[in-house]
Image 1: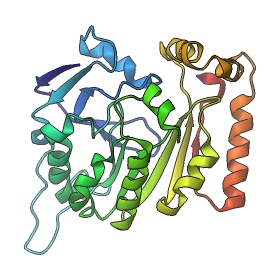
Image 2 (image 1 turned 135 degrees about the vertical axis):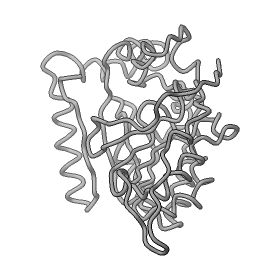
Image 3 (image 1 turned 90 degrees about the vertical axis):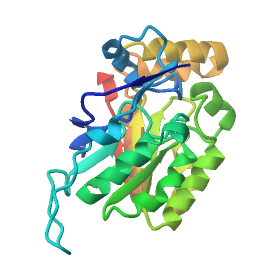
Length: 279
């Protein structure tokens, strides 16, 4: 793992993600090394020759790039350009990489954001998020999410090796919910033959307000990475993967209808973001 300390030129950027106006990425690259990660396209902008998942750029000046909130009259807040705007951490890295324990960039950024009072969304695969509950609860509007792709920890170690265990993630959800934060689980990517989205909902529903669900994005080199993993580790599941992505497949259309019907029947708030045949 190559760790580099860099000074970034900017931090808060406009976003094209659904329901999000701005994104913040405290780190460049990612040490979680998820084999399905679509964000590996960022490598082309970084100049790194290391494989995705083998480098992290630490933006040591990140918190300095959050502008100070304007000062109001005593006892009266003054709105900033970020007040009430939807800000998401993070889109192409994880805000709670293992390196966050040392550098505390995410924590410093959150501290600087509090006076602005954006509508904060924060999502991670790490139980480390619970460290910052004292800050997250200072936002009037905050949604704290945990990604869960599988409940099988052995499979989790194969596809996202440097992430928190499933047990620790569910415990983190419970802790976040206990702190009166609005919580969600991102069930994604849904991996054919691997992700049991029903089981994830049933296992976490007691600690979750809503769910995001997204299918596997196989753009770029992801399709080959996944095919290699299926062939090398789970050849018995390869047919399910191939069926999902063959030309004309209705695999994802069928699953989307199935999820929507389940959520309506069970009273689950599930927000579905599927790409269908486009990816």
